[in-house]
Image 1: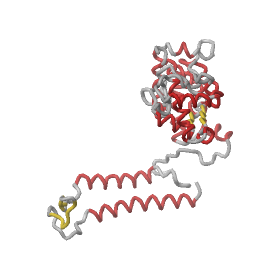
Image 2: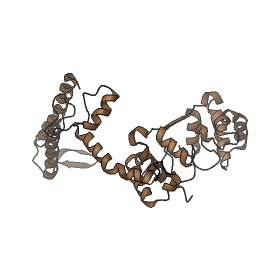
Image 3: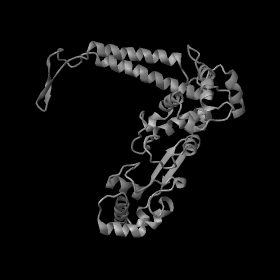
Image 4: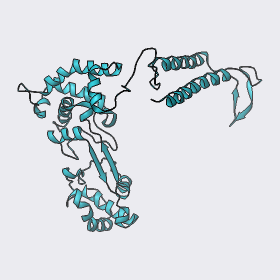
Length: 320
């Protein structure tokens, strides 16, 4: 980081910390002219305020956080150019200029963060390889790994560390994030498709159709037809009008609305809805479109770990 940004961030950080201390000091003094514990000369909604100071433990806790902030700033000043802090910790190698240098320095780096990564890879890498590879040195079939209880436990821990932020700790997802425990898949639920999704990521785009369908009325008609496909009761006239326009959607969702894995287009005939199945949610999807991104994990986790996570995800729907 340049000297300018070092000074800029350092000054702002110190101003904020010192400002908090000044504010706390000022609010700890009784400047109202009313003795502590006595009523203040105003009421609100029939309630009269008492001039009570902040609790001592609360004030003490605030001072503690301010002191910790100062200590942390000098112990881990990762925003400085020439000072790694009292603990000499750095999260990156500032001298790296290209991928080749990065690969070479990763082996001999003095960065504490990189050393921790290297130590973890050395300690656990052999375990991942043992679970992911067969005796011939080839990757085991993911379906076979899914039958190994120990491998599934490891895959679950990797999932909790990297995937639970979006899909939830129970892998049941939430609005906009798919449920991985059912048997409904947008890009396919076979082992190869699951691994491909994890390795390369996905970018699912549903375009906005409001203008093409003729405005709000066209959206209502298409919504009625789509809801009818999943067995819902709808306005028959609107559904018929929507059916006549469904050819626009059939390219991705298929002529029967059952979806196409290759397109990442969901099945519209079941009761599973990624962004909500209420009439309003479906209308919003059709009118404004959706854009869902699943990041690629190949460079972050490596293929060995992905092989094991894929087995865990595959195991979630085996009994469904």
